[in-house]
Length: 244
Image 1 (cartoon, rainbow, N blue to C red):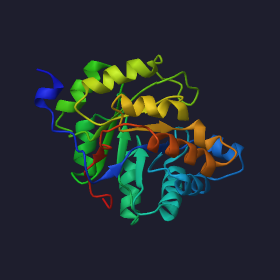
Image 2 (tube, rainbow, N blue to C red; image 1 turned 90 degrees about the horizontal axis):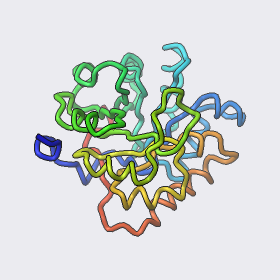
Image 3 (spheres, helix red, strand yellow; image 1 turned 90 degrees about the vertical axis):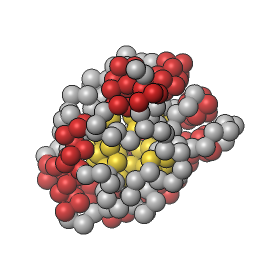
């Protein structure tokens, strides 16, 4: 049985906008003399629509402080996703922060367990790199909201990134998924028209914004590339309460 036959329909209207999705890198921000929160604030002013805080080497306390700092500068309409650490998401929510959800990988806590912990109103994203992983995500009891597919190109921001898919490889996988799909891994602005035409819900950007001299200008370049794409499809969104 295919994912298209068993999965929930794609959410296509109100909710989380994944089109220009910033994934943070503390080291890259610091190398440019900025905090993560400062980088996020500038990037959102340039058009970033969703933010994922990713901290692979920080302590739980440091991770939580970063999430709380970012939550303070983030406008209501921009989703705030916590990478991997369900405990940090729950702690941030307990502290009154507006956090939207969690994104996990294939080697993290099982998505079903994550859903039980974060509740039905939170957004749950899952990384996937094969047709089998995408199908499993679509039919899972975890009620996955969207998938991150990559790596699109070669990337140095993730040590365990899979082999690059390229634009055609991404389009083939995204087209086989019943869930909104975001491309990640070395994404440049010129990719966005092709990604959107290939059915992407958006593009996740790390170095292109975090390592930029001016995050606002960099984000605007990505946002303009997405908006200027001559695609007739409605932008997929995740239907969740962003105040979860």
